[in-house]
Length: 390
Image 1 (spheres, rainbow, N blue to C red):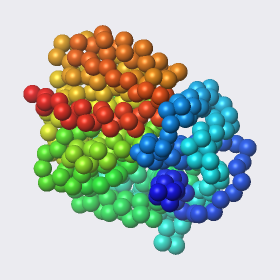
Image 2 (image 1 turned 135 degrees about the horizontal axis):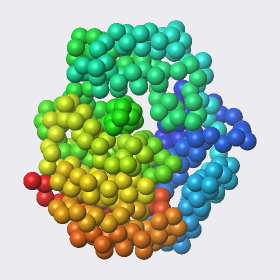
Image 3 (image 1 turned 60 degrees about the vertical axis):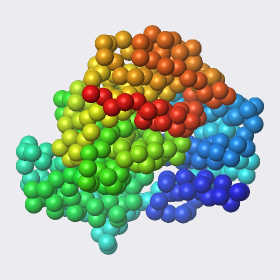
């Protein structure tokens, strides 16, 4: 059991250590990669402890309180303090934990060629294509993916430090070749891919798309995931219960789409653009479009339900959300966290009570962020119980 537990933690940590196994002492300046690595460790540790039932209620509560203090510190811009609090939280669950900073790749070479040379050559080929024609969105996506080929990986951009450069270069080269032949390389594409699409007013919206095998052959439903403040499009795919939402979507033949939430905060136009893009690339079951959001993402999910009620089969708001009162609103499940200092459970419950189609549940002994794993497991199961939207 101990070996399996440590293996789970190591696997999560390696997500941020691709390209090198070297480590160096922690530096004074805390980067986004430092916090992301710690978060993945905490996520794996908590998930393993939760699954095995090893955490007493009092320990679970203390750990959640400490992690939420780290969250508040992060929102306040105190990154060194945030890292220290996260270390304390991880140690509560795993006393053997010691932090070592992972060295991100520098001087990236792909097949003997510097990454930027490969990138520039692919970009030059893309500039010769019709970026205003029917393949405009696919060209935009390929251009965004090509831009991830950098000589020195940024510690502040997860799309870079979660990417394996050689594998990405091979994939993008094939995508450019398909576009040159007039084909959309993302049509019916199965697997996990980081990309971007053009939304409202030309806004670039980063996202992770994880398509089950069924998406290559038949109609599939969609699960849209919206992260909380401070996160990004990789949160639901890699974190939040070690990507439990993506796994459950795949197991239930749903197209999983995890987006940068900020682009969804001002209205539903970017949702409309998203569904147009996905609808051109996959056979979508429009009666099974689900949305799940955490914190800020829960607020965006509730707004989508208010503005596009007929487009959604069900919505889950985790540790956040707002009342949805529009006629024909989809079923809404609000899940609060008993110990949440960021968005107290009483506020989430009030939003549910003010929503005619709302239902409220509460995670005991848990706080704002670590409640997401259990909330996703419960929320996805509940969404799948709802009848298709007609």
